[in-house]
Length: 207
Length: 92
Image 1 (tube, rainbow over the protein chains, first blue to last red):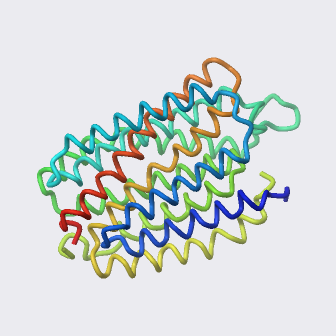
Image 2: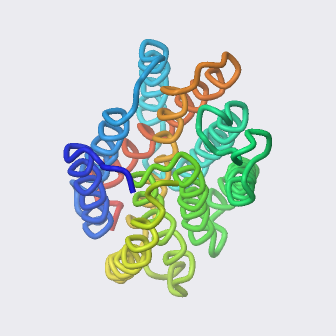
């Protein structure tokens, strides 16, 4: 195991705790802020531990994405939150798919090849294929799920939780490929939570 | 995969904690917990950031940057919607 900076370790532990607190206090008004703070801490920790070579482009695209996300929040009716959350699984799935494709196109940089530098190791091949498959599946399933939620279909909320959980497992594959423990921790929290919520039998009538 | 040993020890108990926390929260109100999981599901942007930060090739960098754009939309919109959802009181 390689040494980890204590600043990064602190950020990772803090982000995991904030996300678990956000889940635990999900019905409180400040839950979203806890989750967002956890995510910000994880992003800060991840960037702190890597050499960033494309910072201007990354900041520009992140700012543009944030502005578009803010427009989505401002222009949406609060009654349609769940269908919109379902639609948001489409960019999440595409983001997962594009990340996996970017890793696939730059195999040497991410050290996922066998010692002969020609082929992927079997484990990395499966992780890459799994991430691509989950990303594509999320992108395909998002719009039909949005329609089902808008129509008030029974059990659609469970499928939404399952789709959110799927992002967790796809992200875990990416985290293992990139050898990113912080991302693996967050992925496990999201994946396990989504799986738990989708398997609870009383969702449809709980509220 | 230098951190594999640590992860192999850490992830099973963490999964258990996540399951217990989610079950306890969902027993009170399941809708906000589903919303929170969907907002947190935007975390793959973290992977996109790491990939875009490290790649040098043009096509891979373009893919990474597009992933950041899409992940950024989902991240801000997800947490923003949850914030509005909680403020209106519909979360319960």
